[in-house]
Image (cartoon, rainbow, N blue to C red; front, top):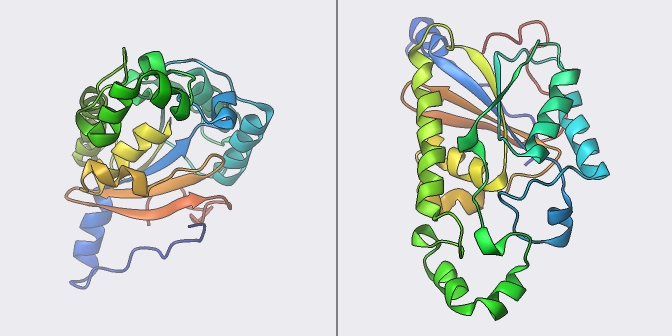
Length: 242
C-alpha cells in the first residue's frame, strides 16, 4: 500500500470527546533499515553487523526526504550498523534536532549458526532443526541462536513501554520515529494492533519506505504502510497530531 491515508474521522459524540482522544495519542513512524548484502543474497541476518549497500544508502535518503518536514520528539534505533546508518541519514535531513537513542530490544533475532546462510543450505545441513523451525517457529530456536519467544518478548516489552507513555503529558500528541528490522517491526505492529504474533508475516516492511501507526490510550490504527511519498501531515502543524 502506498497511498495517502484518510485522516481520522471526527468523533460522533462531538468535538469534546474527539479532542480528548487527540490529547492522548502518539504517532509512531516505523522504518526498516536500508538494503544490505544479506538482503541481496537472501540469507538470514540478525546479529551480523553489516553496513548498508549503496542502494541501502539511497533508500535511507528516500525516507529522509519523505519525512524531512516532520517534527519528531524522539528517534529510537536498533544497535545494528545497518539501522544506525539509516537513522543517521534521516536525522541529518530532518528539521528536528534528533539524537539517535540506541535500543537493544530493537535488534533483530539472533540466528546463531544460521547467520548469513540460505534456507536451502540450512535445510540440507541442519535438517532436524530446520524442520522443527518450520513446524513450530513460535516455540523454535535457530541452532545456537535466540529462541523466538525470547525475541518476541523483548520486542513486546519495549512496545508496551512505548504505548504506556501515551498517558504522560510529555509524550502525548508527539511523533516518534523507530528504525529497526523486519522481524522487530512485524512483532511490534501485531502488538500495537492487538493481533496474534503469527500475523507478523502479513506486514512485509519494505526498505526505502515508512509506515505510520496512531496510538491511543486503548487502541491503535494503521494510518500508512510502506508509504514512499512525502508525508501527508500538514507542514505548518507537524508537531501536533490532527
